[in-house]
Structure formats: structure tokens, C-alpha cells
Length: 267
Ligand SMILES: *[C@@H]1O[C@H](CO)[C@@H](O)[C@H](O)[C@H]1NC(C)=O
Image 1 (spheres, rainbow, N blue to C red):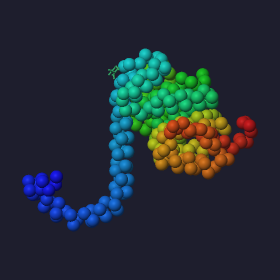
Image 2 (cartoon, protein in one colour; image 1 turned 90 degrees about the vertical axis):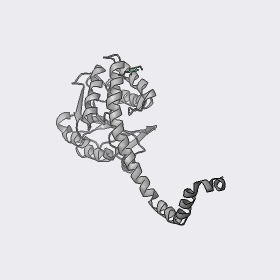
Image 3 (cartoon, protein in one colour; image 1 turned 30 degrees about the vertical axis):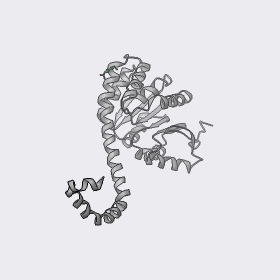
Image 4 (tube, helix red, strand yellow; image 1 turned 135 degrees about the horizontal axis):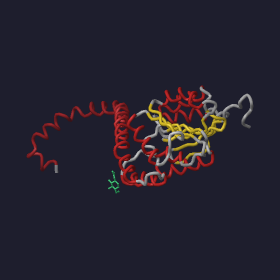
């Protein structure tokens, strides 16, 4: 084939002849740069994907859910999210992991919940609809547009502001302001679905601030991320303090066995 075509593509042949001696150089260079290039590519793609995700979530998910759900009905809002995710790229955790989360919220009946990373409000609505009457959700979102749209979704689901609060800031800032918001109470459930690189620093900050209750459950999403792996490694090395309960897909449930309080309020 090449021989038959050769006379008609003289340019191609000379190009091949010139580049032939360069091949070993190219090969060595490629091998050396390969892993580094891959790492850079991965980082760029992840960043782009995050940007893209944010936009997708805000613009399309919100518009779709807002205009297609029955207002005032949390079940309809969740169903519309699921419908949307069936045909579109979505950042919501979805119905399967959603049920895993439901099970934990039902079992724990947490009074104070902290959600880090609210995306479009899907998880917030799932948690809110199962909270005990005096239960409260504080949800933290760094991106102002996502926070605004997410809050709208929560309101459309029929929840009102004393039950929940949306804070538009970094997780670190939110955790720093927690003591004044929680008063005497501590967190019973912490859902981490924000920047995985912040998972471990945030857990340490919550621990330092003594903000976790004696029965606190920590839920991590996207456990395959290096940041999540760092937290899991930390937790695994401290079996006295933490217990990795169960994993479902890329979500893991961790129980925090906080040291007994002076009054021994929990046994
Ligand atoms: C609502 O749902 C319909 C039917 O699935 C869809 O065509 C429409 O685009 C949705 N509305 C918005 C604003 O996305």
C-alpha cells in the first residue's frame, strides 16, 4: 500500500525519511514526559470539569427542576432531579447513594447537620425531609450562584429558613463561625461533598473546635479522590477515635467516637 502510494506522495516520503532518525529521540522524550504530561493534563481536565460542572448545575439543573417539579413537594423535587440526571450530566449524588444517605439520616435522626458543598440542593432536600422536627441543616457552598440556586431549590421543596441555613463561603470560614451558630449543641452529621482536598483539614478543624457530638456520623462522597483517601488514611490509623462503618459505591460512613465528655453525657 505504502509502496503504491509512494510516488504520488513524494512529500510524505521525504518527511518520513527526515523524521526517521528523530524517532528514538522522540520516543525517549515522550516516555520521560509521559507521566508528567499526564499529571498536568489530568489537573487541567479536572479544573475544567469542575468549572463546567458548576455551570451545568446552576444553569440547567436548576431551570429544569424549578420548572418541572411540583412546588412545595420535596418528593417531586427529588424525582425531577433524578429525571434530569437520567438524560443529562449531573453532579447530584443520585437516587442510589441518596437512599444510602436516607438510611443514615433515618437511623441517626440528627439534630444538627452540616453539609459542605451543596451543588444544586439535591442532598440538602434529601436530608431536610427526614430531619426530626427540631433538626437543622447548615449547608455551605463556596460558589455564590450555586448557593443561590441551591437555596431556591430548598425553598421550592417547601422548607423554611429556621430549618436550614445556606452559608456562602469556604468550608474553613464556615467551620470557624460554627461555635457562634451552634451555641451549646454539636454536629450529629457532617456530609462532605465539597473540594476533597479540604476533607481532612476540615475534619481536623471540626475536631479542634470540639464541634462533633459524641455520636457524630461523617459521610464522605467521592472517596476515590486523593483528598478523601488522605482522610480515610488518617481515620484508619485512629481506631479509638473513628470507625469506618460502611461503604456504598464511592460514599463512606464514618462514626466519630469522640472522647467522653467531663459530665459523661453519653455512654
Ligand atoms: C421540563 O421538562 C421538559 C420535558 O422533559 C423539558 O423538555 C424542558 O426542557 C424542561 N424545562 C426546563 C426549563 O428545562
